[in-house]
Each structure stands twice: as structure tokens, then as C-alpha cells.
Image (cartoon, rainbow, N blue to C red; front, side, top):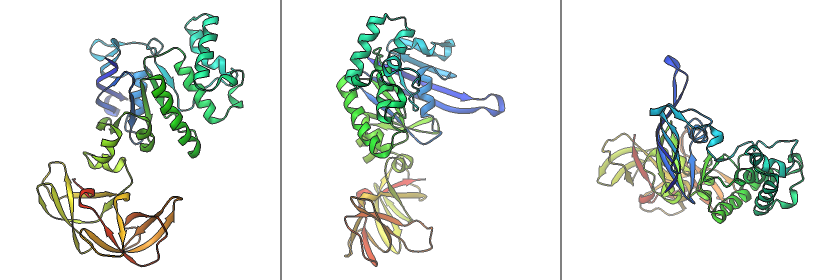
Length: 359
């Protein structure tokens, strides 16, 4: 059984001539023990969808069900209040009470639900122990690190055993190093406790690391969904391909198409790519992941020769930009294990890695 089901959800802001549609018929589900990431650029509708599930936004049409209980039904104009949906919510800002201790912050939701003080103390102690916060129970939020505050917010969401926890950009307030550590902690916690979670993020690396399934939103609709590997390796649209990875848009012109292969002209050479989609038109865009470009001093099949423009040190590798033409025109980026000397190089572009989408 699904822990959460959303069907044909529509939500808009404003009215009359100034109406602004935000969600345009979104459908999704969340099964028990599954983590689903809502991924997309700013304005795509991912946070609005999460807030609609939480009861913090009012949709116009569609349905939302939590387990077997209907939380929203547009056809009946029925909407269950947020406080009755029994969902755990972790805000982007953590929203901790500054004047309350860790224990009081975590137990506050139980207090509002009229749970007895003895049971509150027991449940708070148990959830703090699960998250490694037992020794911090009497501290105040300003006495905690950012990572510890994040765990307190998660503990508060878990303390009353909700069927689903909603995570709104839970790692965005952490610095880069702490974010990587927190990402591993959060994934391990979710698996260990068999949580069902719906998480909003704009970071595709975060979504792939933590989630079992990704819903990529674009302009209020689901562009594509699937497990992280299929989303990264088998994009169905140009939007998905470019959002899910670090890519080169290849400056090329269409020559011909033969079933699943497309011949392109680049920098005076012909290269062959793989057609994505069923289109047959000549107005196309070709992309290739940066990591798929191979740098060589020798020519070969599906290769173009370009001069090196610059190299940038990334720690574990160098990112190299190859560029011909006016400054500002698109070049080709590739990774190298060492810094390259100035000069021209052959860039090998595997046929299977050049994805050609019809515009």
C-alpha cells in the first residue's frame, strides 16, 4: 500500500487575469520505506508540491491521500488541516525554538497532542539516542553546530512516528564538507529506521545519493521519474540530460539520421551520435557528459581536434576547456588526471555518449 498518493494535483496563485499556475496535474506516490526526491530548478513547483502535501498550501484540483485517509479532494472541496495529517516536517531553516532546550524542541509536538509528560520524556530520550543526540538534551539551539541543529529538527519530525516525513532542502544550510557527511548520515538513518520520506532538493548529487526514486519537475509538471541510475544514464529529454549531469552542448550541425544514429558536423569533422526520442527533424541539440570526453594526442573515430584554452584544478582531477573561435562561444570541457600543456588535442566523443535530442 502507498504511504502517500497524489493524483492530478493542480495549484495556482492569484486569480482572474493574474493567475499563475504552479502545479499542472502532478501525480506521484510514495511506498513504505521508500525515499522519493523532488528535484528541479527554482520555480519548478517542487517546494509547492511538498507544502501542498503537508497542508500548508491549498490546491485547486486533484487528490492527496495519506495511506487510506484522504487529505485533500478538490472535487468535494475537502481539505484536512495540516495538524491532522500526522506528517513529520523538517524545514529548510530547521525552525527550532531558540528559548527551548533540545529535549523541549523535540517533545513540543507531543505536548501539543496532549501526550503525558512521562511518555514524552521516554519518546524524546529514545529518538535523541537514535540520532546520537542524547548528551545534548539540555542544550539550547545556539549551543549546537549546524549539523546538530539539523539532527534535532529530524528528531522532532520522527518523535511521534509519522507515516511519512517531509524534508524541505534539509542540507542546504550546511557548508560543503558538512553537507557530504550529513548526506551519508541521513541516508543511513532512513534505511535503518525504514522511513518513508519525500525530500525537496535542487542538488542532483544529493538527490541521487539519498533517494530511491527521483521525480524531476519542470515548470509544474513531472519531466521524468525513475531510480537515480536510470535518470542519469538514460535521460528521455534534453532537460533531464542537462539537469542531471555536467554536460557539453556540442556546437554542431545536422547532416543525416539513420534509425538510431545521427551524423553531425563539428569543427569540419563528421561525428556520429545516438538519437534520443522518436523525432526525425533536423533541428537538434547534441550533448555529451564531461566525463565521457577522452583527451588524446592521437586521432581516431568520432574525434575532433581543438586547442586547449585553460585548465582548472579540482583537487582529484583537472577540468580542461578546449575552445576554438570567439571568446564566449561554447567550447568542450573534459577531465584530465594531470595538467595539460598548451597545444591542440584530439577529443574522442564515443557514439553512445553523444545524445542527440530533437528541439
